[in-house]
Length: 331
Ligand SMILES: [Zn+2]
Ligand SMILES: [Zn+2]
Image 1 (cartoon, rainbow, N blue to C red):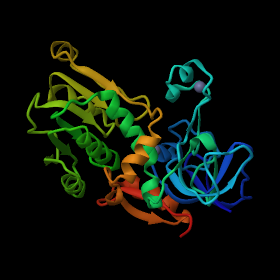
Image 2 (cartoon, rainbow, N blue to C red):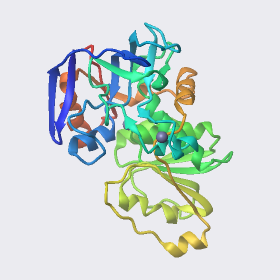
Image 3 (spheres, rainbow, N blue to C red):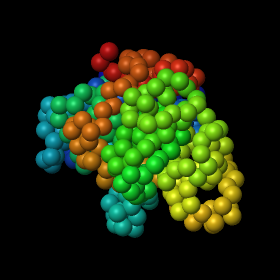
Image 4 (spheres, rainbow, N blue to C red):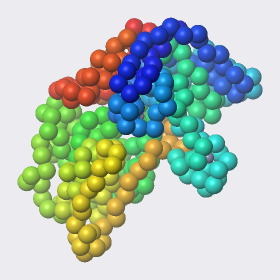
């Protein structure tokens, strides 16, 4: 089969390798769609947890082609997506329902071979049926799971007025999820015009190209979906007294932010972050299947495996119109 390896930071190669087999408890999946995520780019640049060489791709869907001994919940031919975070279920974090902080964590596409290949294996417990969803939508199960985890941690209230900074794929998934929580108003901020248009089409009541001119203390909840330290710092002045701030975007490793400590005290703010997800895959698939969250407008490119490097460059360049780039190994 064909498989893309990040051999070491900065080096990508398409290789012919033997097709893996499903060992007991595992499922072999023919990959149909595999989204490129910011995390893949961090792994490509050597900025994240990846162990090299690695087959990247942790947001993927496909068809079950082989089931290992003992597999009971999925069957040959099932259309599925993969939850890439593999927790041990036997460390203090896992036993306290904090599987996202598992001491023995492995990640499909991070420390284990991922979905940027024609076939991938995953443990049965990481595999979820996507019914008749398009494969490119099923591949959103993982990023949507992370978004739902953040939304639940924040605890929205009916009729909240919300500011979301960033209208890339994650910003839009946040927008759609927060609308489902009953927000009465969402302002979406992005410097890219096409992204602002998409935010409007996705239900934002207002958009802006920058934070200048937004009402101070104008929002019940402010969400940063950029991870840009200079923008994260601005959240404190935009949220109302007693409000909540969700720092969702992934900042560069080692970066620092400077916050107005007295304002945080005086305003009685709740500051939240969110790391991956905890048992949100079924929720994500249900919302996708029910059409409550439609991700079709988020896929800007569908490229063959050999174009993974080009896909990464498109995202890195931040070219107008680039949203989620899907790799389709069958192209
Ligand atoms: Zn991801
Ligand atoms: Zn664990």
